Each structure stands twice: as C-alpha cells, then as structure tokens.
Image (cartoon, rainbow, N blue to C red):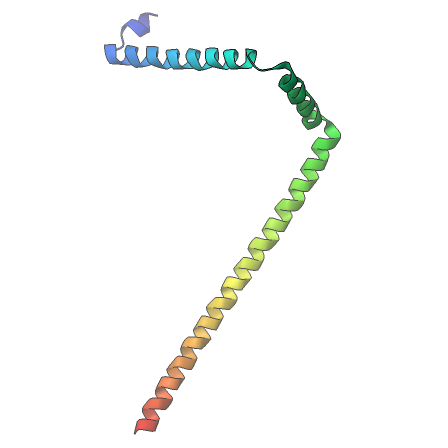
Length: 108
C-alpha cells in the first residue's frame, strides 16, 4: 500500500478503473449464470461430461492428429504444385523468347 501511494494520480485512476472492469465483468458473469434456466445447465453438464470422457478425448485426439497429418500432406502437395507452376512459367518464358527470335529471324 505504501508503494501504491507513491504512484501518480493518473496511474491510480487507471488501476482503479481496471479493477472496476474486472469486478464488473465477474459480477455480470455471475448474474447471467444465475439467471440461466436449469434445462440449459443440465445440457451443458452432459456436454461437459462427454468432453471430459477419456475415450472421447482419445478419439478426438486421434482425429485431430489425422487431420494434422492430412494438412501437412496438403501443404507438401501445394509446395510441389508451386514448384511445377514455376517450372511451367519458366518454360513458357523460354518458348515466348524462342517465338520472338523466330519472328525476328523470319523478318530478315
């Protein structure tokens, strides 16, 4: 508290406002939780039980790992496609240059 009294007035005001916001949000959250119907609370409890169930958690983990592997494969394919498109663009540039040279030679 001694250190708090050494702060400039603006800092004390900001500190107080921050605490007011924190406690206000907490209070409003408790009010909205208390006003929620019991049916919704029971449904939320069932959902929470399913989420916490270890077998379901393992299944979700396996699915997420599979999705991660598929995403990595997709990223690798995209890198290869980018390289292929770059190669095609280089070849198209070379063909354009050759056509340009051929036209210049045919004009002479």
